[in-house]
Amino acid sequence: MVKIRPFRGLRPQIELSSRIASKPYDVLNSEEARIEVQKEPLSFLQISKPEVHFDSSISPYADEVYEKGNEIFKKFIAEGYLQRDEEASMYVYSQVMNGRRQTGLVAGSSIDDYFNNIIKKHELTLIAKENDRIRHMKTKMAQPGMVFLTYRNIDEITAIINNIIATPPLVHFVDELDVTHQLWKISDSTITHTLQDLFATRVEASYIADGHHRSAASAKVGAAIRAAKGEYTGEEPFNYFLSCLFPSNQLQIIDYNRVIKDLNGYSSSEILEKIQENFEIEVKSKLYAPTSLHEFSMYLDGKWYALKAKDHTYDNNDPIKCLDVTVLSQFILDPILGIKDQRTDKRIDFVGGIRGLGELSKRVDSGEMAIAFAFFPVTLDQLMSIADNGMIMPPKSTWFEPKLKSGLVINLLDD
Image 1 (spheres, rainbow, N blue to C red):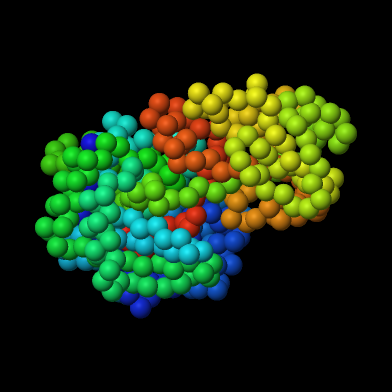
Image 2 (tube, rainbow, N blue to C red):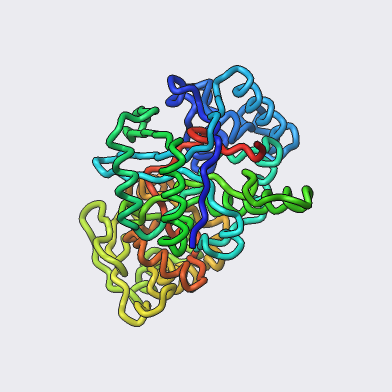
């Protein structure tokens, strides 16, 4: 069962929340982050991506970059931009995008649950990205970005949270993407204890929706602090990591699409001929989005195509073989386009569905890429089934929107 705890959150001054809270560090490259910081000098990206203060010739993994992030973090605290709550609390974080609301509980999630697979994973992590987050956390002794967790809905938990969001929020703002962000603080120990008990007795597991590197880094930093101290109670802040837990029935996964730089030496007609062995192909007169599982969109030579996977290409009784990302990899990317490892191959790039299918045709039409594929989104049931079976999804299989803001609530690793 799932163990959570309240903590003394470090938060922006309420009137500065909309200015400080930023996009997560991993949805922007360094140049995009520099532009964001130029537009908003108080953006938390100064702390989460401190390379924005350096010339692009300086590695984002250089010692001085991490030191700069810590310097600015301490400055934000010293100047009162970030203030720590006096009492241990949980928080409710609600987002509304395109009329759809998702509301999560911000709490500390146990690193022991992470190590014992009660917090379940569905992606592999990259050591370089883990080490980057570890250095950020160790330098600041803080977890600045929430891990996006989900769990199977429990009505009693939802009822408590619904009562809270019926009251005026502490924080309310609408961001540049027209997403509404609201935050409530739960400092009533009766309510936090009830929520802890409900998670400990009713929620069998939580699932990482987004934040595999943040959670892995947090668990490793916590374990390192334990080893260094030798003695600990298990309730210290470093035994938990900053998380926001959403019921799965409120979430929506959107597509995460692929663009490839070249046709692996084939002509367009040869590519179509090879694809036709395993897919039914239909030319579309305009931009086309898949309408069901096992259907893909393809953009090639200025034309959109619908690709319907033939029955032998998937197995709906197998959690991995039923995934469309697996079908595309096994029957097009690997055997035809020569993409053997999507995690390391430089010829492939990934485009979140939030950018729209027009982004795919734009990148192909520009000559940067040669071919693009779009998916019907993975379902939450598929994700949880894979995690429950201890399996790993292919890379870049899921994209969640809206993203959780960084810097809205921070967990310090000391008391």
